Image (cartoon, rainbow, N blue to C red; front, top):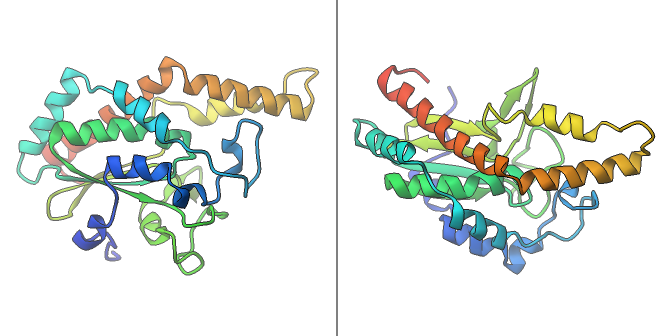
Length: 244
Protein backbone atom coordinates (compact mmCIF):
# COMPACT_ATOMS: atom_id res chain seq x y z
CA UNK A 1 0.00 0.00 0.00
CA UNK A 2 1.42 3.40 -1.02
CA UNK A 3 2.36 5.75 1.78
CA UNK A 4 -0.13 8.54 2.34
CA UNK A 5 0.88 12.10 1.56
CA UNK A 6 -1.29 13.22 4.50
CA UNK A 7 1.21 13.94 7.24
CA UNK A 8 1.03 16.20 10.26
CA UNK A 9 3.07 18.80 8.40
CA UNK A 10 0.91 18.66 5.25
CA UNK A 11 -2.33 18.74 7.22
CA UNK A 12 -1.20 21.87 9.05
CA UNK A 13 -0.91 23.70 5.72
CA UNK A 14 -4.65 23.51 5.11
CA UNK A 15 -7.03 26.35 5.91
CA UNK A 16 -9.46 26.46 8.79
CA UNK A 17 -13.10 27.00 7.83
CA UNK A 18 -12.93 30.72 8.67
CA UNK A 19 -9.72 31.08 6.68
CA UNK A 20 -11.24 29.23 3.73
CA UNK A 21 -14.36 31.40 3.69
CA UNK A 22 -12.28 34.58 3.78
CA UNK A 23 -10.03 33.18 1.06
CA UNK A 24 -13.04 32.49 -1.20
CA UNK A 25 -13.53 36.23 -1.65
CA UNK A 26 -9.91 37.23 -2.13
CA UNK A 27 -8.37 38.41 -5.41
CA UNK A 28 -6.08 35.37 -5.21
CA UNK A 29 -9.01 32.95 -5.35
CA UNK A 30 -11.11 34.98 -7.76
CA UNK A 31 -8.19 35.04 -10.20
CA UNK A 32 -8.32 31.24 -10.46
CA UNK A 33 -10.18 29.63 -13.34
CA UNK A 34 -13.77 28.59 -12.62
CA UNK A 35 -15.70 25.56 -13.76
CA UNK A 36 -17.95 26.43 -16.70
CA UNK A 37 -21.22 24.76 -15.70
CA UNK A 38 -21.16 26.61 -12.39
CA UNK A 39 -22.34 29.80 -14.08
CA UNK A 40 -26.09 30.55 -14.41
CA UNK A 41 -25.87 30.79 -18.20
CA UNK A 42 -23.76 27.65 -18.59
CA UNK A 43 -20.63 29.75 -18.95
CA UNK A 44 -17.32 28.46 -20.15
CA UNK A 45 -14.00 27.48 -18.71
CA UNK A 46 -11.92 30.62 -18.24
CA UNK A 47 -14.88 32.81 -17.24
CA UNK A 48 -14.48 34.94 -14.08
CA UNK A 49 -14.80 33.12 -10.79
CA UNK A 50 -17.69 34.04 -8.50
CA UNK A 51 -17.23 35.16 -4.90
CA UNK A 52 -19.02 32.48 -2.84
CA UNK A 53 -17.87 33.65 0.58
CA UNK A 54 -21.35 35.00 1.45
CA UNK A 55 -22.94 31.67 0.47
CA UNK A 56 -20.64 29.79 2.86
CA UNK A 57 -21.31 32.26 5.66
CA UNK A 58 -25.08 32.08 5.19
CA UNK A 59 -25.13 28.29 5.09
CA UNK A 60 -22.85 28.06 8.12
CA UNK A 61 -25.04 30.50 10.08
CA UNK A 62 -28.08 28.27 9.67
CA UNK A 63 -26.33 24.89 9.78
CA UNK A 64 -27.10 22.94 12.94
CA UNK A 65 -26.37 19.38 14.01
CA UNK A 66 -29.28 17.48 15.49
CA UNK A 67 -29.08 16.52 19.15
CA UNK A 68 -28.40 12.93 18.08
CA UNK A 69 -25.59 13.96 15.73
CA UNK A 70 -23.97 16.12 18.42
CA UNK A 71 -24.18 13.31 20.95
CA UNK A 72 -22.82 10.82 18.44
CA UNK A 73 -19.68 12.79 17.56
CA UNK A 74 -18.95 13.39 21.25
CA UNK A 75 -19.31 9.66 21.93
CA UNK A 76 -17.04 8.77 19.01
CA UNK A 77 -14.35 11.24 20.05
CA UNK A 78 -14.31 9.73 23.54
CA UNK A 79 -13.55 6.23 22.23
CA UNK A 80 -9.99 4.85 22.08
CA UNK A 81 -8.60 5.75 18.67
CA UNK A 82 -11.51 8.06 18.02
CA UNK A 83 -11.69 10.85 15.43
CA UNK A 84 -9.55 13.92 15.95
CA UNK A 85 -8.99 15.54 12.55
CA UNK A 86 -10.91 16.13 9.32
CA UNK A 87 -9.19 16.85 6.01
CA UNK A 88 -11.36 18.35 3.27
CA UNK A 89 -10.62 18.86 -0.41
CA UNK A 90 -12.88 21.53 -1.88
CA UNK A 91 -13.57 23.91 -4.74
CA UNK A 92 -16.01 26.73 -4.04
CA UNK A 93 -17.59 26.54 -7.53
CA UNK A 94 -18.94 23.10 -6.55
CA UNK A 95 -22.52 23.02 -5.27
CA UNK A 96 -21.64 19.88 -3.31
CA UNK A 97 -18.86 21.75 -1.49
CA UNK A 98 -21.06 24.75 -0.78
CA UNK A 99 -23.70 22.36 0.61
CA UNK A 100 -21.51 20.17 2.82
CA UNK A 101 -18.59 22.28 3.99
CA UNK A 102 -20.55 24.40 6.51
CA UNK A 103 -22.07 21.22 8.00
CA UNK A 104 -18.61 19.65 8.25
CA UNK A 105 -17.42 22.76 10.08
CA UNK A 106 -20.27 22.36 12.57
CA UNK A 107 -19.37 18.67 13.01
CA UNK A 108 -15.76 19.56 13.75
CA UNK A 109 -16.83 22.19 16.27
CA UNK A 110 -19.22 19.82 18.07
CA UNK A 111 -16.55 17.17 18.46
CA UNK A 112 -13.56 19.43 18.99
CA UNK A 113 -11.95 18.07 15.82
CA UNK A 114 -9.28 19.94 13.91
CA UNK A 115 -10.53 20.80 10.41
CA UNK A 116 -8.24 21.74 7.52
CA UNK A 117 -9.37 22.54 3.98
CA UNK A 118 -7.37 22.27 0.76
CA UNK A 119 -8.13 23.43 -2.77
CA UNK A 120 -8.17 20.65 -5.32
CA UNK A 121 -6.88 22.80 -8.18
CA UNK A 122 -4.30 25.48 -8.73
CA UNK A 123 -4.82 28.40 -11.09
CA UNK A 124 -6.39 26.15 -13.71
CA UNK A 125 -9.39 23.84 -13.28
CA UNK A 126 -8.57 20.15 -13.62
CA UNK A 127 -9.51 19.17 -17.16
CA UNK A 128 -9.20 15.40 -16.84
CA UNK A 129 -10.83 12.78 -14.65
CA UNK A 130 -7.52 11.72 -13.15
CA UNK A 131 -5.16 14.48 -12.00
CA UNK A 132 -1.45 14.60 -12.79
CA UNK A 133 0.52 16.32 -10.02
CA UNK A 134 3.43 17.03 -12.35
CA UNK A 135 1.15 18.88 -14.79
CA UNK A 136 -0.17 21.25 -12.11
CA UNK A 137 2.45 21.67 -9.37
CA UNK A 138 0.45 24.56 -7.86
CA UNK A 139 -2.50 22.22 -7.15
CA UNK A 140 -3.13 19.53 -4.53
CA UNK A 141 -3.51 16.74 -7.05
CA UNK A 142 -1.27 14.42 -5.05
CA UNK A 143 -3.83 14.62 -2.24
CA UNK A 144 -6.68 14.13 -4.67
CA UNK A 145 -5.16 10.90 -6.01
CA UNK A 146 -5.63 9.31 -2.58
CA UNK A 147 -9.38 9.98 -2.65
CA UNK A 148 -10.54 9.28 -6.19
CA UNK A 149 -14.26 8.66 -6.59
CA UNK A 150 -14.56 5.18 -8.09
CA UNK A 151 -17.98 4.39 -9.51
CA UNK A 152 -19.66 3.03 -12.63
CA UNK A 153 -16.42 1.40 -13.76
CA UNK A 154 -14.47 4.67 -13.77
CA UNK A 155 -12.90 7.15 -11.40
CA UNK A 156 -13.26 10.88 -10.95
CA UNK A 157 -11.49 13.59 -8.97
CA UNK A 158 -14.74 14.51 -7.21
CA UNK A 159 -15.16 17.16 -4.52
CA UNK A 160 -15.77 17.51 -1.72
CA UNK A 161 -13.65 14.89 -0.04
CA UNK A 162 -13.80 14.62 3.74
CA UNK A 163 -11.33 12.22 5.36
CA UNK A 164 -11.50 11.65 9.11
CA UNK A 165 -8.35 10.72 11.02
CA UNK A 166 -7.21 9.81 14.51
CA UNK A 167 -4.81 12.19 16.22
CA UNK A 168 -1.88 10.19 14.81
CA UNK A 169 -3.29 10.35 11.25
CA UNK A 170 -4.74 6.89 10.94
CA UNK A 171 -7.61 7.22 8.49
CA UNK A 172 -10.97 6.16 9.91
CA UNK A 173 -13.37 6.95 7.08
CA UNK A 174 -13.84 9.04 3.97
CA UNK A 175 -16.79 10.78 2.37
CA UNK A 176 -16.86 11.83 -1.28
CA UNK A 177 -19.11 14.22 -3.22
CA UNK A 178 -22.62 13.60 -1.88
CA UNK A 179 -24.53 11.29 0.50
CA UNK A 180 -26.03 8.07 -0.83
CA UNK A 181 -29.59 9.31 -0.31
CA UNK A 182 -29.02 12.22 -2.75
CA UNK A 183 -29.74 10.65 -6.16
CA UNK A 184 -27.76 13.36 -7.90
CA UNK A 185 -26.94 11.56 -11.15
CA UNK A 186 -30.58 10.55 -11.59
CA UNK A 187 -31.90 14.02 -10.77
CA UNK A 188 -29.44 15.86 -13.02
CA UNK A 189 -30.05 13.46 -15.88
CA UNK A 190 -33.78 14.09 -15.59
CA UNK A 191 -33.32 17.87 -15.44
CA UNK A 192 -30.99 17.92 -18.43
CA UNK A 193 -33.17 15.79 -20.69
CA UNK A 194 -34.88 17.96 -23.30
CA UNK A 195 -38.66 18.23 -23.03
CA UNK A 196 -40.84 17.82 -26.13
CA UNK A 197 -40.43 20.89 -28.32
CA UNK A 198 -37.43 22.30 -26.44
CA UNK A 199 -34.33 23.38 -28.26
CA UNK A 200 -30.93 22.41 -26.88
CA UNK A 201 -30.41 25.95 -25.60
CA UNK A 202 -33.84 26.02 -23.93
CA UNK A 203 -33.24 22.67 -22.26
CA UNK A 204 -29.88 23.86 -20.93
CA UNK A 205 -31.37 27.09 -19.56
CA UNK A 206 -34.25 25.26 -17.87
CA UNK A 207 -31.95 22.59 -16.38
CA UNK A 208 -29.68 25.29 -14.96
CA UNK A 209 -32.67 27.11 -13.50
CA UNK A 210 -34.09 23.93 -11.96
CA UNK A 211 -30.75 23.00 -10.42
CA UNK A 212 -30.36 26.49 -8.92
CA UNK A 213 -33.85 26.15 -7.40
CA UNK A 214 -32.91 22.76 -5.97
CA UNK A 215 -29.85 24.27 -4.29
CA UNK A 216 -32.10 26.83 -2.57
CA UNK A 217 -34.63 24.23 -1.48
CA UNK A 218 -34.85 22.45 1.89
CA UNK A 219 -33.46 19.34 0.24
CA UNK A 220 -29.92 20.71 0.12
CA UNK A 221 -30.03 21.18 3.90
CA UNK A 222 -31.50 17.69 4.23
CA UNK A 223 -28.66 16.20 2.19
CA UNK A 224 -26.02 18.16 4.12
CA UNK A 225 -27.42 16.62 7.30
CA UNK A 226 -27.43 13.20 5.62
CA UNK A 227 -23.73 13.61 4.83
CA UNK A 228 -23.00 14.13 8.51
CA UNK A 229 -25.12 11.13 9.51
CA UNK A 230 -23.35 9.00 6.90
CA UNK A 231 -19.93 9.99 8.27
CA UNK A 232 -20.99 9.38 11.87
CA UNK A 233 -22.42 5.96 10.99
CA UNK A 234 -19.24 4.94 9.19
CA UNK A 235 -17.11 6.10 12.13
CA UNK A 236 -19.28 4.07 14.50
CA UNK A 237 -18.83 0.96 12.38
CA UNK A 238 -15.08 1.48 12.17
CA UNK A 239 -14.65 1.94 15.90
CA UNK A 240 -17.01 -0.84 17.00
CA UNK A 241 -16.63 -3.47 14.28
CA UNK A 242 -13.30 -2.57 12.71
CA UNK A 243 -12.19 -2.74 9.11
CA UNK A 244 -12.35 0.12 6.67
